[in-house]
Image (cartoon, rainbow, N blue to C red; front, side, top):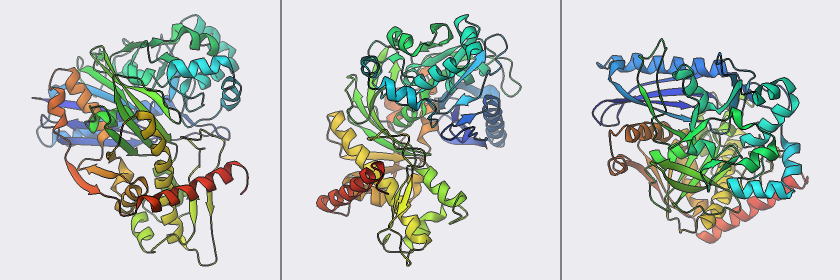
Length: 498
């Protein structure tokens, strides 16, 4: 690669922008948080204008920092986008104005629809077509709910006057001044109305969910040339957006997990586990089957498990319980005690993901005594995250049909050595942490550079340098016992025993 790539990472709580040079070194970065909205219990929304403003602000910050080292925006050869996947919005085609707040992947407003649909033949067929669970986690039932509850929006949708898109599609629309309404296969595969076997929108799922085809974006390969920048005050016209991947697929790409059976876990707001299954779409019993990426017409699949709350549990202890001021402080606090002394934390603050798929579940801190202090709760939090991941990943490994010996980890919470060691212990697997744990945004840079012809896949595989390896210290029997106790507690929670 001989020039610069701008990578946009639009996440659940903030937007970030990184500028990479020809050696994939970061020369500029920016980040801007935005507000979360909770209009009703279980509902989560974003203001799309605030999301767009945060993206613009982060790009401006990245450009300003990079400019100190002689960088010029004229040297940007390609833009890559990665994004929170299932979150979606609706906007007017004529003006680009959002019609409502974006509905976030964490939102559970369509739970009743899922309860009914999941038991039906139609629901089972949709699950088979899409590889997904009938869950409010995915876009489809929430879009169906929104259209059902708003007759005006539904009428305009049928007339073709409005556009639907996940966040990548909305950003692409804004970057191109409305000239591009498109998405990539990885994001489309998270909607609950995309046939991952045929690589096309599913007429059957759209009919069942009552979603007009007129509002849908064009689905392109992940390394396609999606559009060129136009009419922006912070970027020149003509820069190609040459790659898009959903955030977890981008992390898999950024970890250079290009071969079958390679796996990664990303610790962000939630924890997300993907195993590359090659060009074969394998059915996942406890998790989901998904498209990892489609490159030049050839699709790579993955199986995935999702834990809704990971790093957000640490934020909960920080912001809601005021146990510490900075999230990084939890490691030293947890290390100040030798064990959690029987305290346990089930981090179901927005429900349970894999393998339970129970969005109505709620979190629990238990096992408290008069001797319990905040250090025990902090340690229980890290253990709870790790145990929930271990339970889900064990099922995922079976779904993949491969023996997983090494897992690559990334994301902010992966910097916590205490948690990573415990994670290795309960998984009985070696973990590898790269020097750069920001592999989601790195994946966006990689896909853009590859799409623009600035590098080859084999070039990218050599960039992931391992910073630290964690090997299990517990015997497998001890790890299995910890997971057994964990499962018993979660099942008791779901049964209403607490």
